[in-house]
Length: 277
Image (cartoon, rainbow, N blue to C red; front, side, top):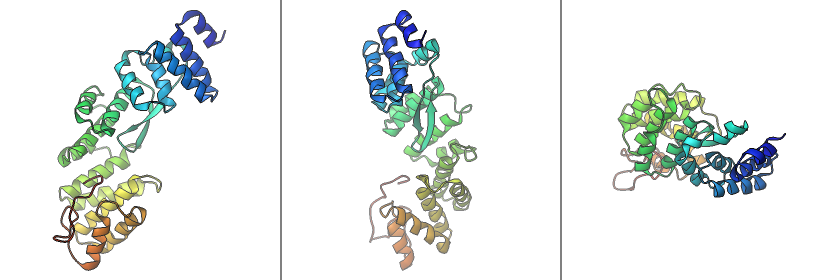
């Protein structure tokens, strides 16, 4: 007997809709899968695995992750009952993509949801429900993201310590750690961290632009203008409006120093509107 037929005999209407949704999802019939998963949550709003199905289909993603977490005690219920594997993916922080499958994944995805929207009170509450940071690198990474939002560079350094060798988190952690060191005036240490992360960062990674910018800042601050210029030029070529890159290129060409916030005193004003601003 097929699992959907067995569900018709033993499960609720919501479970039967979930099973039909699973059959459609596996068959690549995504519109039908959405219809069935929606039917399941309409009949049983607490069915976390039906919300997971919608999340996997990239349908109502924000609503789905909050609903899954609200009903987290049921996360995995249908998958375990019927032996049907299902997962999705989520962004840990802004650039790191991870699988959403287990209760641990769900707690991290929920915190990342509030991080992405910069809802700090909700983020802090969600972080408290994540695995202990001393036992889980992903939680530490989210705490680093939280420190970044608060411009707490010392905390950012503390939370990224030891993460730069992590296979998944290392590049972004290196960017955070290097940027924090530049902000704190620790330029020589920033150079080493940022250069290592840049070597590891593949050309298609979005962090590459930011790594080049902050490494250029570290070089510039230690008087290594010839090393900084090609990095600034590469950033400007990729994104002419990125932070204060254009102003820094102009100032280096003119021999005029910029202040910490990228302004040539009395000529350029306004903080850069990007990460690290």
